[in-house]
Length: 269
Length: 280
Image (cartoon, rainbow over all chains, first blue to last red; front, side, top):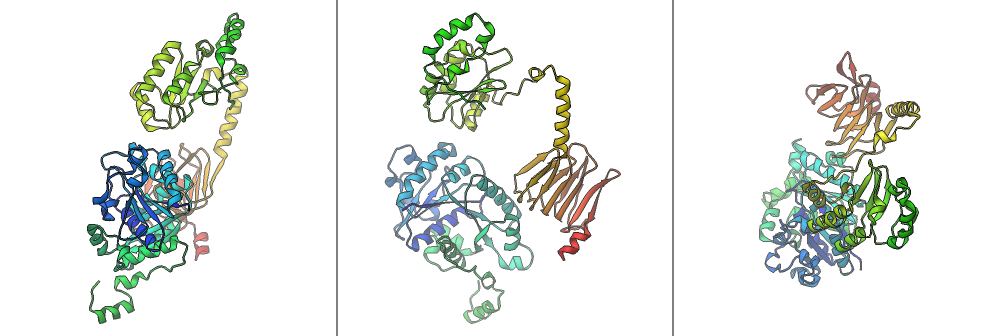
């Protein structure tokens, strides 16, 4: 077994890198893959909270690098989904505590034991990004349909290309189809026109993301929301399956069928 | 660039010194043949236009670096006045201890002339700067470069400059945010110029796709230049010494194929109707 190492990055902060990493990791584990999600955001770790594993963190990957503990001691196993692990970051250190060579070595150590290694990259283009990206072969770039976010994603894609990462795929997060229809938000096509990379999924804006984040349960574990379905589809596409893009119009409540559904269910989304 | 190594140099150099002491000039220039045999792990000297550059392997420990540098026979590295030595630490994160030891036991002890302390590691560069050490690659000594055929060289230089100005730089894909092209000649971008990307050209600029980033044609003062864009969508264009702003409301050419020129010192934007018709 040699894992595929994928970095989730964006350039801009707050676009959903950590949420995407947690949900894709959980979805891949649900498909029977052995997955480790590494929080590469040293000093500002959050992946443990979003995955609901913060109480079980004892060691972190800096401890592994500094040989304070063994890899097995630092890995936190998620008991809800078999095959899902978290390798947390240190909260009391800074991004200078690790260098790209050490991250590469860390990933190499993990590769034989896993199918997927997902690296949650910090925002920015400095040391933290370089460390996280160094160990990865592939990249998922997360952007929201806002001009600053798209511009930062463009910058990051340029840097990833120069680092030789391939394939680099795009996740458009927090899309509001009704705003797109009204012309108040960038459409998927507008973003792809600028970024010119393969789109792996579109995640609609969804209240359940906030709920899931606060509850510490990745949405893909329960699958009761549009965003959860979107992340599950992304995981399937990562596995090489041909899954069509979701019909976001129905989630926006503007489609004909969704209106009928809404009428019968009496449910407001 | 010629690369050579030092190995067991102390053994070999004894006779070398005796022979060269008679000849002062020869003594100043390191005997390259003697330096070819080197330990693989040692700092590797490279001949440069400013003297010698020691590339220090990143896999060495700090103690090994010190040992490797201590092995350098001081007399062998007495270079001509205008030349010196550069130390290149690569991506290594240098400690204060290492810098202090290099200064104490090697640089001052052996009276070496260190021109620059190079590193690609940000922390190391900060440390060198804080210690007041030069961190930039030394520039070539221009006065030394002048040869008897000075006039000849000047002509060649002019020819080269003309070549540079008339050269066309082609970018074969879209330019992303943060990417920049700067040239004295013309630029052809066979793709989009995304927001945050920049092209500065001494000549004209053609962007085959969408022009969303910043362009400056005639960046070195020329006025006989133009900007051509497949789709004009940038809020700012610089041409010659003029700067102009645009948006979807102020110009009818927005999102159209345009050519921008300087006419009587005023930037003029025109729709390239032929191309626009082709699009339709």
